[in-house]
Image (cartoon, rainbow, N blue to C red; front, top):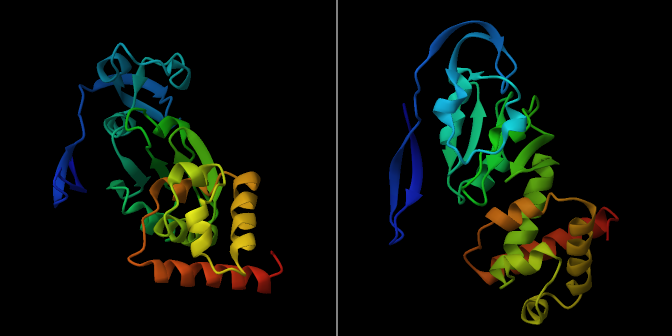
Amino acid sequence: MTIDYDTRDGEGNDYIKKVVIKEYQQHELKPYLCPICHQEKNVGIDIKDIVSGCFTDWAFIGNSKYICPECSRYFSLNFYNYVIDSDGIHLYNIRRLKDELIRPQKPPFMFCISTTQKKHLFYKAKWNYSSSPFCANLETETICTTIPKMKELFDLVEALQTLGSRKDDLKVGKISFDVYQKLNKDNRHYVLELLHREIAESRQIQIPIYCGQKYESEENAICTINSIVKTKNMEGQL
């Protein structure tokens, strides 16, 4: 089984990579509960055939010796960001994540964003039974959010990134002096206050900080920030 994955090579050229989803020897068994999906199955794959000796997350597997064939496929996904739904597995590069986070997904679905490309995330993530609100895993952290909130936070973060903000600074609520000077003088305090509030109140903003992309121009970024501040003032949130 292979899945198409849009990516880029070392020179920045777009191409489609064929990602191989590993298949393992299946065993006919007495009915058992798969420790991942918790559904009763009578066909399973020996967990030792799937994981290496470096595997440490045995707490998520429990005492079960077998995993169902469907769930075994997810062990091939640790290098990727993905959504799993009734149509199968969908792989997304970091540039595509925003589009998926701000559009309704097809419930039930699972949303996993890998920041290290080293860990299995699916057995730590939650299945969503509504398109908004929903939960997405940012690495091993499950973050609950909504589509409108994601749109709002992507606008704020991407505008600040376009003006020169570093992701490491935004994570802790910092805006450099150079970026601060580019903001409309009347909006500077409000933007900093808004960033601090989002950092303090929830972890939702960490998703766009990780996968947000810059705008084409600083002019668009300034217009976006002015619009955000105007809307927040009208709503009495600033």
